[in-house]
Length: 591
Figure 1 (tube, rainbow, N blue to C red):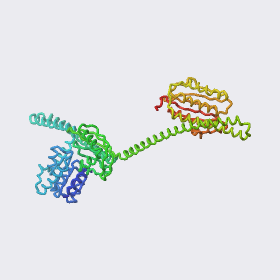
Figure 2 (figure 1 turned 180 degrees about the vertical axis):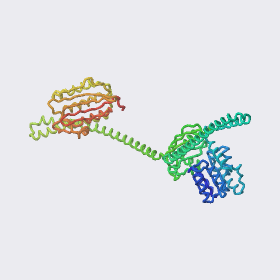
Figure 3 (figure 1 turned 90 degrees about the horizontal axis):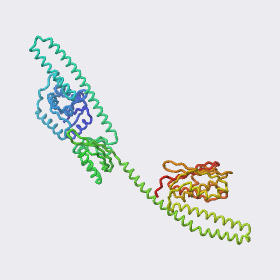
């Protein structure tokens, strides 16, 4: 059978069309009564299913037009509405000639059953006759207006009271007219007043009707915006009833999950809970049952198998809303978090790899420090022998050697001394990593006094003006190591200074987290290109003949400072001197 469905809601048209075509019917659709009449007069239609509230021409008007048209009168007419639901609406619809009025929502099977009943009765010619059919146009318009008026919520109740008062006044007026002819003038005046009140009431009623239409238009626009929003956001919006059945799911679910909304409506648990990963199904069911039973928030992440067989991760959230009958239903939204989960797994694997590499590097550094210590320690004894025997050779046989031989012995002894100094620096460097820090509360004024005494000869030899900021703080550190840092930095400031009056200044400032010490000189300075390089092992920028040292001092300083949780750096310009700064945290570093 070819069935015409009339509704201004595209989703309702889609659902009805899907339902009817699934039952073997051919479907023609229209969005309002006027469009429906055109299709009725140009096609052979076996049944009409119409909504009531529509623009241009509503369902009541369409039904009346059909029942007044000899060519359309015999077509079974069924109203399908969610707005006109009370008894009087049904009676009005049947008096217009409708064969059935079905109130939304209704189970699809029940809806199909009702339609099949109308079709069967139509074929048998046993459709019930219209109840007191409406003939006069005025009567129709009056009752049609009443149907609209009945939909005006609280305002309608107020108007009904006013109408009742008006009828009472008219009855009183009639009684007065029958019994008191002499008071015609008064009765007329009273009637005029009542007429004015009625006019005002009608005007108010028209205004209310206009407001209601505007409100309905606003609601319709709001619904359209909501549908548009739901259709265009990347997440999927869903609703289930108190039994857990999906009553709505947004169309973009197909992009994420592979199934269409209709397949989900029809498939039930089979196409949802039945496809959740076995390791996740219990927590999902428990959270969902708690949501519907107790109204607690539903927020879970789980894996589910798409229609094409691929597993994806979903983040599903919902809240419970209580219906008028007291039952809970769920409104939710879920997102595809597959890429996020994959990134988390990659990050976890990367972190594990980095931790493993860090452990391997720490182990390698420890082994390297042990090796350096052992090699340096074992080399010292042979070097002492070379240095001693070269001294004996120079003392006992020097007068027998020519000038070239004496030069060779001098070079041999110098290299042995330099090699011994290198080994000693290597031992110092390895001890920083091998020996545990001995932390204590140390007064920096006292520590610098000790360092000054150790460097007294060099200070006096070059007539250095050493200026130490008074009232330096008391800090928690390894006293021996930090003294070594100050000693190395002051020694370098003395050594690499070509001024007539060398000046070395030691200062300190602090913030909430650390003390920052600085050792500033007016020496030769360092090119900016080498500010980082000088902290490398055995890095020397000056010629060996002009300046003593192995180039390991600053490396040792950096390692000591970093072992305390601080950092060290230099600021310098060639010819203007250098400032070496380092920090010591106020909170002791955990070993």
